[in-house]
Length: 262
Image (cartoon, rainbow, N blue to C red; front, side):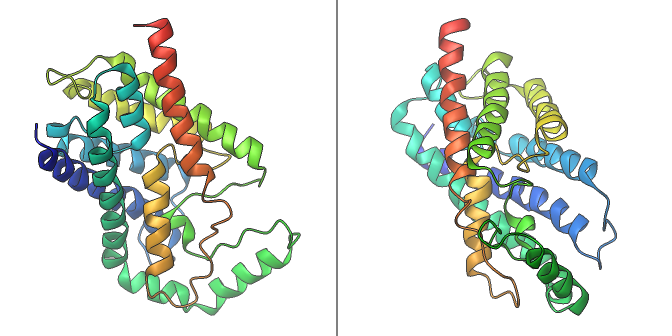
C-alpha cells in the first residue's frame, strides 16, 4: 500500500471518528439540541459508534485512527516504522477536519450557546468557586473539542490515560490481525468499538478518556483557532497529558504484547 493510500484512508477515517465523537459531545452539551443532557452513557456509546464507523471507512489502511494504536502495532512488528509518520500525519489532519465539521454541523448551536447569558454566568461562577491557582483555563465549549479532568492532578490524570490506552491498544493487538497485516478484521473492528464503550464507562470518569493523542490535540487546536465568541481558553496547561499518556500507553501495550503474547 502506498503512502498516499495510507494518508488518505487515515485522514478520512479519523475525520469521521472526530465528527461523530465530537458531535455527540456537542449534542449533549447544547441547550438547543434535541440530545441535551442525554448524559455520559450517550457520550460513551456515541464515541463507540464513532470508532466503529471511522474504522470501517478506513479499513484499507488498517484503520488505526490513533497514534497510540500505530505505535503499538509498530512495536508488535505489524507496521513498518517508516510508515508511522504517514499514519500520524493522516490521523492529525483528520482529527482537525472532523472538529471543524462539528462546528459546521452545530454552527447555530455554538452561536446561541456562547451568547446565552445564563451559560456564560454559570461558567464564570463555576470558575470563581475554585482556587484560581488550580483553576482550568477552559471555555464553556472546550469539552466538545477535547478532554479535561474532573480532579486536576497531573500524576493521576497521566496514569489514568496510560492505563486506559494500554487496555485499548492491548485489546487491539490481541484480537488478531486482518489479512493485510495492519489492523483488526471486520469482527475485530466491532469488538474494538465495544472496548471503547467499556473504557468510557469504566475508566473515562476521571479524565474523559482521550486514549488518542490526535483526538484531543487536533480539536484543541481547532478550538483555539475557530472564531467562536466568548469561547474562553483552550487549557493548554493540561493539553500534554492526553498526548503523552496515550503514547506511553500504546508503547506499553506493544511491550506487553511482545513479552506475553509474541
